[in-house]
Each structure stands twice: as structure tokens, then as C-alpha cells.
Length: 153
Image 1 (cartoon, helix red, strand yellow):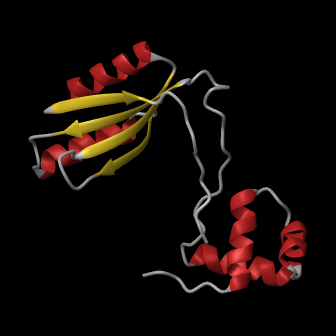
Image 2 (tube, one colour; image 1 turned 120 degrees about the horizontal axis):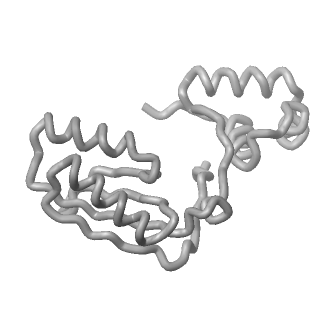
């Protein structure tokens, strides 16, 4: 169930999404409030689960992870044991940035970030050695047009 947020909550969340390293004083000034009410609202939104963990965004290319693949997976296995093993395998692979179970012809889509095509092949070989997969299609992203962590508020 969605949490009810007022305009001030949304302003605070927008500031945190833009730069969570801002001080409470900075956020309060930008949203037109004072420090204590902003802190109380942030604490409440954390307690409600609106705000999860805080982290830092890294530039994958600066770290040598220049290849982004979208991996489409079809499986003929739908038993609980297979799913548990598959999900555990995905969670254990740091190359997998995102994994989604889909409706339609494709069962899963993965976003995989690696150094190059050879590194993707190593990931692929490891994946298929751990779990039985019916079909895998890898799509190399030629250009990242938009990527954001900012949710529309």
C-alpha cells in the first residue's frame, strides 16, 4: 500500500534523490523549512519504508565496466527448486545489476555490467553451468541514452 506523502515530503525526497549527501540544513533551506521538522519527516519516511538504504553511484566506465548487456532468458523449468537455485545464482553474481521476472514470451531479463564481451562470455558460461536454461539471448547496449535513479514524485 502506498504511503501518503504531502508536498513537503515530496520536496524533501526530491532533494535526497538529487544528492543524499546534503546536510539537513541545506535540505531544510531548499525546501523552505527548518532542520528539526525535516529530520522528523526523513525519520518517519525511513520508518515507513519510503526511504531505503543510502548509497553512492559509481561510474561503471571509469571502473572499466564498459559493456552493458541485457540478457533475455527463457526457461522450460518452473519448479520451486529450480527457481530458488536460479535466484540464488543471480544474487551471487555481482555482474547482475538488475533481474526481473516478466510476463510474456521471455521469463527473465537481466541487466549485466562487465568489462567486455569476453567477460560477458565468462559470466554466461558460469550461469549455464549452474542452472539449466532453455534459451539465452544477449543484447549489447551500444549507447546509454537515459539512466536515472530518480523516481517521479
